[in-house]
Length: 450
Image (cartoon, rainbow, N blue to C red; front, side, top):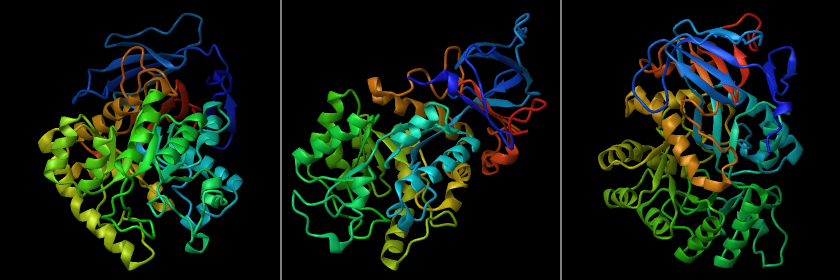
């Protein structure tokens, strides 16, 4: 259970300030609302937040409660929208170089990740689906108010076959028999190497035991991994099915890392509910996604300044191949009406982590701003809801409606006209609220982050 009494304001320069239970309602006035579902802004409206929930929305003025000391924030006709959701994030590894992330003391990794979690929230991302890493401690610290950060839907360790995209071992560590020692990345909870259906089932259950809201498996070759070719299909149908059964028995689902038609089709046949990446999918595969109602979490990977630096030409060639498929992948997704999620998948690169919002703005290449904003709010929230009873944050996310969780942003301009506002969150995000708590408020005198 989340500890309401330990929620914190983030007051830059003043340290965290406790926010006790029984706090007064917060009233936001004169806001034009993008609700996370539609494509237009509302008439000037008032929104009252009580505790962690949106209590009332009205185009008529909502008077402050008599004697309650209700904070009133005048939005000045600016846009109020739901907090952003990144459906493919790595809270522990976004900003650390790979050699540091995979060798450093876990205490150091956690401290760096805690600082990055704060910065993630201040970029307007109030929720992330974490798709690989030892994130359970960070999630707990955020939920208890010890550090500032987004809501985290954790997968725990990504599950990989030997030599797969999640196998970070050195060749000098091979071979390993069944009783051999675990590698450091396995010990720290970054990866779980599993071969055979029984091993996959065991590692899947371990992540669920730790609190995973969904499972992440590596079903095909990757760009940043050293050993596996991009066209490699990883795991067999029975191995994937073992993870799906473990997840389904806990009321949740499996998502997979996969790029190629064969890897995607095998995963769908095994019952996987979400494909992450998929830039090399062909038309029959995309039709199958639509027929089986499988989510496609597709990232805007392009061969541009936001491409992750690669250490050698072999991995750079794989990166170029993926980037060349992105335009076609989005075109096929739109043509066949596949359910799309949006995420960034930033790994091991602090500069790119700071451009999280810029990657959202890049989506204007394929979609209208309204479509992009729906994808990063209401649509992504629908994907998160697949975790069912394993949902760590029961309630309605990603929308502005009465009874929804109060994760809110106020912007300096109109994002339905210009997504580039998210490229500079320090300047353009004037208010950030998560779970009814203000972490940034430049609209009120003396507000946090003023």
